[in-house]
Amino acid sequence: MTFHAAVGQAQALDGREASLQATHHALNNLGAVAPGLGIVIASHQYQARDVANGVASLLGDAPLIGFSSPAGLTGNGLYNHSVVVAVLSADDLAAGSHWLSGYAQSSRETASQLEMLVSGEQAQNTIFFADGFNGDAEQFCNSISPNKFRIVGSLSSGDLHTGNNYQIAGNQNGAGALTALTFSGNLRMGIGHAHGWDPVGGQMRVTRSRGFWLRTLDARPASETYAELFGFPARDWGFPPLSHMARLYPLGMEQGEELVVRSPIRVEADGSFRMNAPVRDGADAFILVGSRISCQAAAQKATQQALRELDGVKPAFALVLVDIAWQMLLKATPGAEIAAIQEIIGEEIPIAGGYTLGQIVPGSVDAPPEFLNQHIVVILFGEGK
Image 1 (spheres, helix red, strand yellow):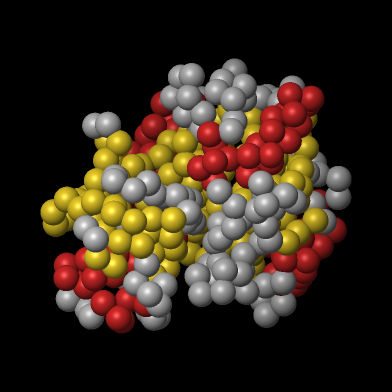
Image 2 (cartoon, rainbow, N blue to C red):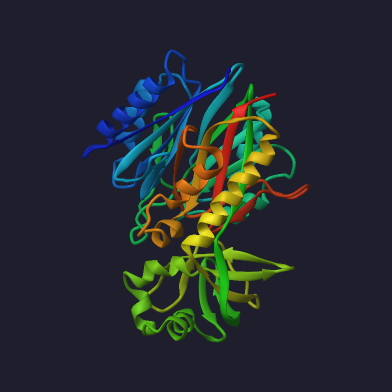
């Protein structure tokens, strides 16, 4: 087989030490094969520069991208305060990592810059990670020309109170950016996505919103609607832990025959919801509730979809991008989504992943990429036909 992948994981007090250990483990698992590219998922509690420098010092010239997450995921489950490193190698692999610093200031312009980079390199696939607290992911997606190239990615997560998060591209690191990995070669990529949330309660209407802030539902502060349904006083939703737990209860916005999921990052003191995608006035919405069983079923559905896209190719590596709400929901059974994936692909396939504040998948035919909330995205890699 000409496609190889390996994953390493480590926990340490210092970000550089954890990244060095994780990369060393990944390279040992890869064996004598030279790494062609690297992906790192690191705790937001580490310093970004320590993580980036540690991984890059061992990967040499291999392109590297990464993002921050509250926890890392591997085939062995969930790890807090850790670094997870995946290294991939394939015949004729041509890859490049790119740091686009202006994402938070202009997501539309960043989309144009990425398109030019991909066009110049004639890359077949692009994986990217962008700031989850700043920038407009939906605007970014809508600014990508349909059918130009295949793109998938997610939004970095971290501290929901302070907004601390970061992105990595080689030795470059920090917040407010988009980091992209462009690649072509003897490999194939299958992508699947799903979520495990269903409507509960009656239909509501968005009566006032402004930018990323949803002010009122049915002419009342958004927190009052949640207080009525879940029983906690409206004033309590503006403070931890409820201000962050609102992520567990996203809104399903009616869009044609489907519900588009839009999730709060937090509840503000005035009862409004800070979203990471604008919500339009007049939209009809439902509160959604998830469960462990439905999320495990969604993880398997996404994996099966990714397998179908591989078109008979045996998977050799899985990159798993999961909404941060899953970590909250599955707190009593950490890593349950990984176990569900392994029921489909087996336990021998290397897995790396983390928790995100939004997911991006290829759109349908003649449509731009699609921005998602609350989903799990499973990206399976195998040797190209």
